Each structure stands twice: as C-alpha cells, then as structure tokens.
Amino acid sequence: MTSILESFGNNSLAMITLLIVIPALLLGTAYLFRRLESRERLLAIEKGVYQPISAEEGYRRARRIAIVLIAAGIGVILAFVLEAFAHGRPPVAAGLGIIPLMIGLGLLFDLRLQRRELRRIGLRTLSSADREGSDR
Image 1 (cartoon, one colour):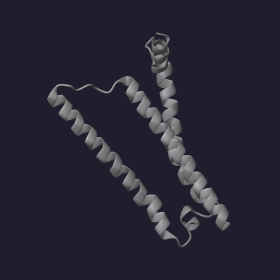
Image 2 (cartoon, helix red, strand yellow; image 1 turned 90 degrees about the vertical axis):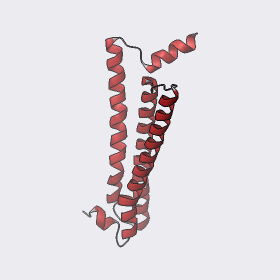
Image 3 (tube, rainbow, N blue to C red; image 1 turned 180 degrees about the horizontal axis):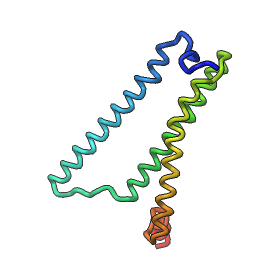
Image 4 (tube, one colour; image 1 turned 60 degrees about the vertical axis):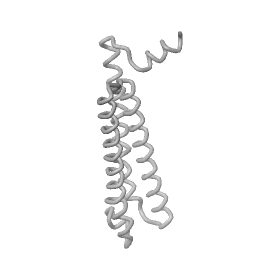
C-alpha cells in the first residue's frame, strides 16, 4: 500500500500547499475575523449597547460550522479520488478529507445531544421557539 507522500509523486508543491499553506490561511482568516469581532464588541461595550450572543445564535453558528466542515471533507475526498482516478493511482490521499468530515459529523452529533438534553430538563430549544413564534 502506498503512503500519502508517495501518492503525491514528485509534486511536492501540491503537498506543501495542502498540508501547510491552506490550513495556515484558514487559521489566519479565523484569527482576523475573531479579532474584528472582539474589537466591535469592545466598542459596543464602551457605547453601552453591548448585546451578548444568544444561545440560538451560538447554535446556528455551530451548525453552520459543522455543515461547512462536512462539505469540505467531502470535497477533499472527491478531489483526491478524482485526481487518483485520472492518474491511475490508488486514492490514498483521500483519507485527508476524513478529518474535517468526522469533525463536522461529531459537531452535529454533539448539537443533537445538547438539544435532547435541553428538552429532557424542560428548557425550550431553538426549534421549539421557532415553532411557537410562527404560530403567533
């Protein structure tokens, strides 16, 4: 069985890009976005109009992140499978897509467990609040 490094062949630039540059760019973008959010939050606190993020907004963000991770994982897997098929090699590098796919699935699973726990203790969840709001 070939290793991931062997599946790239002589194309070390692709390996460096996939394993180092793209994650670094994603982390840098996330950092800049969080820094901007923090600055806006501090300015709002100074003006006295700060409103904390609601539980519903946090749930929506987590669900959105999970969906993006799942889609990215599937995209990476498909890209490597198609590339391997085109060059007649085994799709060993497609395993890299399993990481974001599983993280996204785990996040969705955790959100389901949290919602079930909230229902069990009697608190309203996002979906029940939406249903009640639409009835009015």
